Length: 418
Image (cartoon, rainbow, N blue to C red; front, side, top):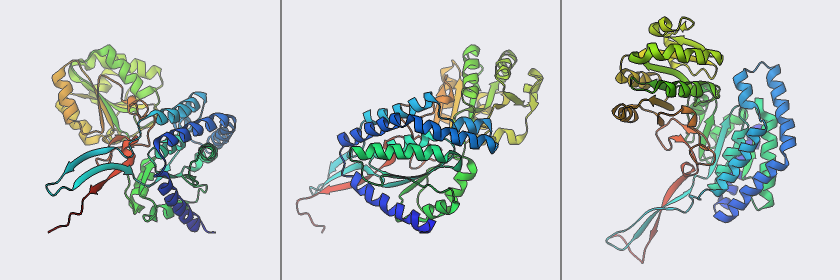
């Protein structure tokens, strides 16, 4: 069979599985999810071996340290992946939830109710934990899933997907509810993106080039985030010790992820007191600093920033810094150069806090906290299927509710329209 035929068959199987999943009740779905988590625990040694194969290939192929970090499945990340599935099982099932209900003058009762989207395709790079997170959320929300990971995580994704499918099947998961595309041929992606008759939604997770390609080719709706150019603004009324802690965490905790800070904005009134201090902390953590003229005056080790630096998602230990004269200028910078992902203000001034919250155009906006919290698990969603920088149909971390749509149920007693 050809790649195109294989993908079409997967789509047909997924559509059938989605119909079967829609008939599975909440209690049984939770039992299935717990069994999926059990299977990951049982297969932990095999998954570790598969992940080491991917890491070895990545090192041989010259993957960056940030990409290797995304790829790595250590014990802590395995624990988190397993816990994430169990957490999803414990969450309230949105399917069947009544959003609203009203009765018309003619007696018709109209109910707006949450239902599954149907078949969801996930096209992603690097992070193999996405395989487990997205599968768990889709099963809980009664959606079938087709996964297509990157070649750099091929062995890890296959081991995880096999464990999930095996564990789910033990407790009644419909066949083909979780499927993984096992070829790295790009023809598979092209065919998947054509199947709007079988796939209801595509969610790409990866670099900007991948997301643009998916968006341009897909015939079905796409929920995306192009990149995470995240900012922290240190206001004139900031607690500078708190600001330093937040800045270092936002940049250094995991620099290769989309919610890491890429640009630090500092009010000119506190720049002289704050920047040399935070620069020392950042540079001791290995961060390369690129700054505007004032930043370079205050931090002689900083390199001059270019216009391109303000747009850049480094995903590495590199940070752009700009000194601004006002909150207005900080907001204008963020709305001009940002990616509508995650932005933060550090300030004790409630007026400034509220202005920042209202005016910054991003999916998640923080006051006195690190942007690293933009994460489905940290938001209490158990896991996430992605972080949307779109404004429709979902925005920010996407959990169970974002994997539903709705339909209207109309209950009558013989009414006919005049």
